[in-house]
Image 1 (cartoon, rainbow, N blue to C red):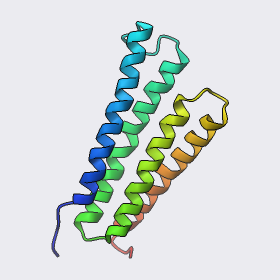
Image 2 (image 1 turned 180 degrees about the vertical axis):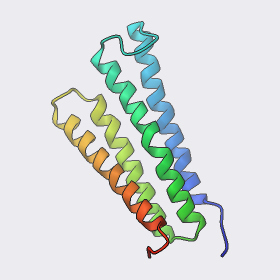
Image 3 (image 1 turned 30 degrees about the vertical axis):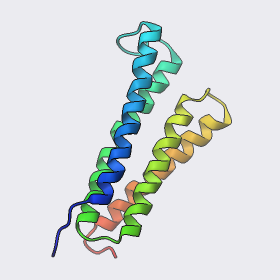
Image 4 (image 1 turned 135 degrees about the vertical axis):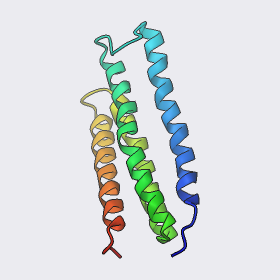
Length: 134
């Protein structure tokens, strides 16, 4: 079996790195603006920004490791693009929803679609990583 470097996954990881930095910057700017160096200071907008950032950090690494492993084992490029493209869309949608006003349509659409798509990618990548999968 030939193992190849996960070049496609790495390209997506570069984009995820920029997105993660942007989410971090939103938190930092809000902390400065609200003079809140720790926690959320009871500010709902800062709490949502912190959770959008944290949620990204909780989900993206594991999924990217799974997909990188799939790519290294020679999974089709289209499958890698589908998994990572869906994850990218989900991880853009989710913070848009989280940073939208609570109760608005974008809040629910962003959060629900973002979360559901992230779960779907995690489950699909996990399935494809099983020894008996196609």
